[in-house]
Image (cartoon, rainbow, N blue to C red; front, side, top):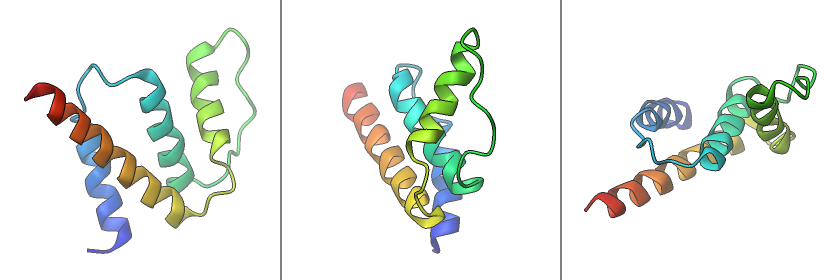
Length: 91
């Protein structure tokens, strides 16, 4: 399986993460996903009153400069880690 296929598979698995997944971890995944699929941030930072979108933008900006492949690999690793933690906490 190629990196792209593995990335897409883990993007689907990420949808099964438990509700208890922290916002910080969700933002890390969001930033890596956007970097892998879009590339560097291509929009302006949302306004101060738009906290949710601003946090998402900041998470994406934090991984700016990573290659598509590096972002995909980091995303896969993070999803695996979160799924393992979720499995460990439910058993």
